[in-house]
Image (cartoon, rainbow, N blue to C red; front, side, top):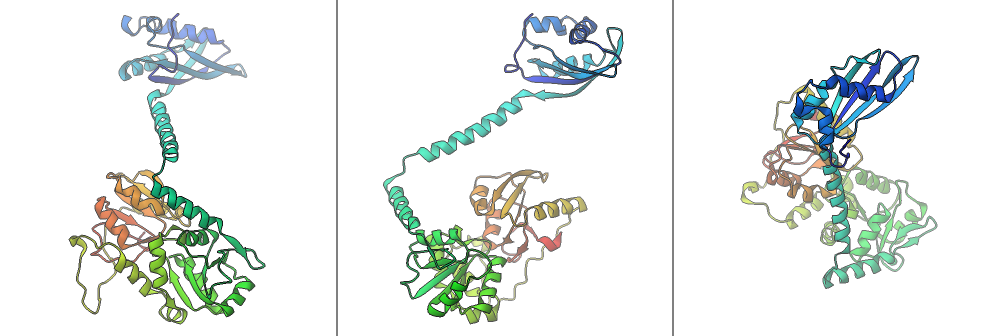
Length: 411
């Protein structure tokens, strides 16, 4: 008897069977053919469909316990959706197998092509990654890669705690204190060899001694953790200057230009302590960033009296709870959820890749992320026609974006 393989089938009928008695697999298959014969007409006769290859081999898996038999029925087909559903429904008319009463229920009809499509997408991604990694770079990229590789090879350890550091710490009169090893590597790539990593939140004793001998600039991430590290250093060590990465960014993510901007905008430690945050640093970033289009431009009076973003939106309690749950799920991950119009999750990306990801998408309705809502993110949202921006907090005003901004307290 002809049969069709699972590879060439479009749909698979999955059903369960329960029998009041003990029977064998051939009994079940015989009942399926016998009791559906003539029920659906000649065009949907199971035997003829198998001969023509439109229905595959019927798989029956049974197990017996205490005089009762149960199991699964699997039937692959290459028919269309309606015909497959009719075949599946006909199985539920079988009420006896041999001398025993039986009940057959169809659990689902599975589309095999969905699984194949998922495989194609994942395999295509893998092939594209491999292709990009093997593309021959041009001479400029080769030069930059070699130069950066040499600088990264220069990373050493400093002090009795073996802290990650650049090779020029002892020779330089000024030293940059950073949070981790990745920050030291990024500074080396940008040509700064006089940095030392704290390698954690506790301040090593050797760092305290270094602060007495050198002019110290503390360079931390643009988040609350960076502020806490600066505060602790001020209490136990003598530091001279403070600078930060832009809000929501880490030092290891910064470009060479951003690093130079941050170091030029450093403020005295006393000023940082008095003001609570280095506002001069953020102003320097904004002044050197590309100017927005006319729709975002707004002249400010000498005294800026704009109020924080307070746009109200009516959300159902179910939507609020869903947004709140996803926002809590992202705490500490530095990730972002992308949602469609029905607020289903399209995907999750690191916040550092959010801008590049949104440039290529036009079906994102909401973005929920672990970080503050900034002007840059507001501009990206407007370009991508995003309606909701949901973050931990916000530093923008109602004129900075057309999107609805929600923070943790709003939910």
